[in-house]
Image (tube, rainbow, N blue to C red; front, side, top):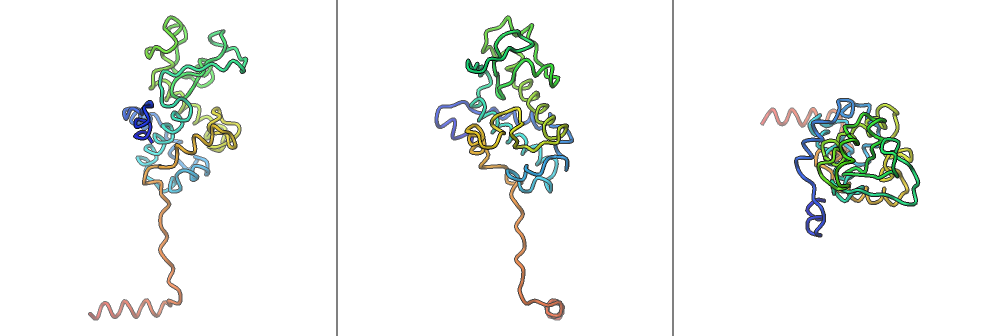
Amino acid sequence: MDAKKAELGGKTWNPSWDKLIEELIPPEMLSSRVPHDVRRFCPNFYRMSDTDKRVFWAYFFQALAGAEAGLNPTSNVHHPQMVHIDQVTGQPEHQEGLLQLTFEDEKAYGCNFDWQRDRALPPRDPNRTILQPQNNLGCGIKILDNQIIDQRKPLITRHSYWSTLQPGTIAYRVFAKEMTNPPAACAKPERSPRLKGVTTADVHEKAADAKAQ
């Protein structure tokens, strides 16, 4: 996914962000409490080790950032057709950073954003707290944790914070394309072929022959 973006001259994913996400994933997002539709993207999720699950979530958030912001950590977008005043800034709402978040998320999810500091900096200054990947990605993890664990909603739902996780939207189709090459550990285990016409007696006879050799 990332190599292709580089080939096209787009933004690329910083590998250090993978480690950041893996360290921030809470234990409940590694448990059986994760909704079953995770198997849409990672069929083997419930059988994987916690380490492999963390790798999957890093891949998931990379895909989400690709669909939301084109992997651009300083993305700052305002949609004029959406008239909403951010209750923290008192200004028209902007979606910012890798996961296109807002300052209101600081109050709603306990995110590490500081509007009083950020307001003095240019809109796309990477030093702004909302644009720093560790804060933006960390906030996104809290938002998803709230959706799938606290609210017990599916991973893909029309009630998701992100339109990219809402089924039937153009944004979701973009996200789904980003999710076409998940980690190898996600692959569905191959089932052993069933042997037709083989009886227990046949199995015992084969074992006896092997012992006699």
